[in-house]
Image 1 (cartoon, rainbow, N blue to C red):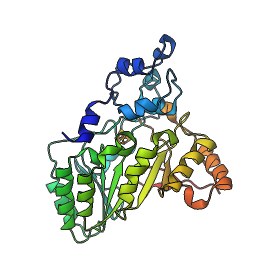
Image 2 (tube, rainbow, N blue to C red):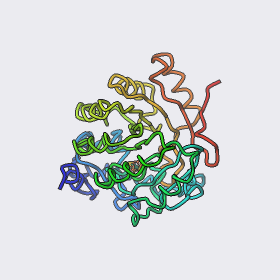
Image 3 (tube, rainbow, N blue to C red):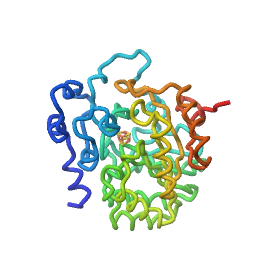
Image 4 (cartoon, protein in one colour):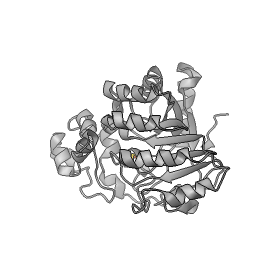
Length: 323
Ligand code: SF4
């Protein structure tokens, strides 16, 4: 078994085991939802970074289900970005011109409590994506394939290699974009084998890493990101603005400075997609605009991501301006 798969197998899936590991007392245990519909899935690396007996830890809040998830909010939805309206097949979505998104699988290195795709009807039967690639091949207006999921880095190297070699055969595809969060949980996924398959791409590869808080980063993560960057692959980052996790000027500033200092470009700051069970993370648009305004006073423009909201049916993500 590869190193990263053996690390993945050790993830925490049992709430009590994680709370024991984190030395939680009875009072704080009472806040936690024991049997969440979107199950607990936490890599050891992230659990080790969580403060002990601290339900307000920014990593704990992102990955451990709280009873708040059961609160009813009339504005929350099962599929807040209406993925199902944009399905060309179960595994191919097209929301915007020139780009198509492959839902490569439903597996992630961790389960984020605010994930907008936590209710997606994943279909694992077709891993070669023949039907999807045939559709893309027949549409020369598509220039970029986004590999998403779940997490594309959950696929084996063999499947990823086959996918890349197939995409190499489609002349109008210029860019392959990996949307992944794997590196903050199991950076060892960036193995020599994985790097070698990236080198086989004849298309420009771009990585968009999902990172929300400085605590998700460390020297190991930076070292593995560097291996990708050394292949000439731009590494962008996406952040979701989350109440009590990163909704302060200081938290965002520290994160963006860390990213920039390692050559990663903060690309998007997303407002929360109103998925059921995650409304306690919601930050108002006015607060979000205020945070960006404050950041502009203290950081260079290139280190501040675009604040955006996904509004289903729009031709692109909707930028939130502060005029
Ligand atoms: S890693 Fe991404 S796809 Fe997976 S649960 Fe987290 S946000 Fe959702």
